Length: 121
Image 1: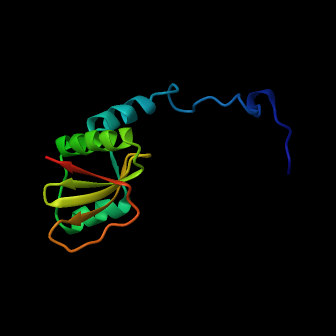
Image 2 (image 1 turned 60 degrees about the vertical axis):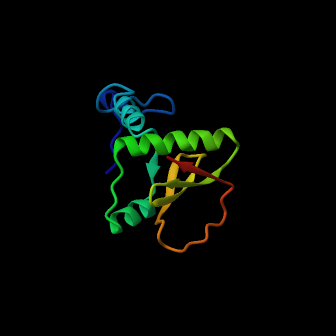
């Protein structure tokens, strides 16, 4: 049966919702710190799978260098860029700083739908 909402059971209206656990921003700070450590670069599920299949792991330093390369490419106006890094080629979006896919350089591969490339030393 339906009961009336008592004073202790007030319904929050738009703009009145407060965080349930902790203060606002407690989650945002560690998230931003983690993104700074990785150079703000994210890996798509597809890229993670490709790297795992090839037993390739990227260190925080690697991710930092990829992030710097993405910044350089974005400064030139690219949106989707090919990053050539050692024996690895990665296609990344500079818009959302995400590595979309990863390919070992020894494979023959044609890259399409990119508007720039960065060779990383």
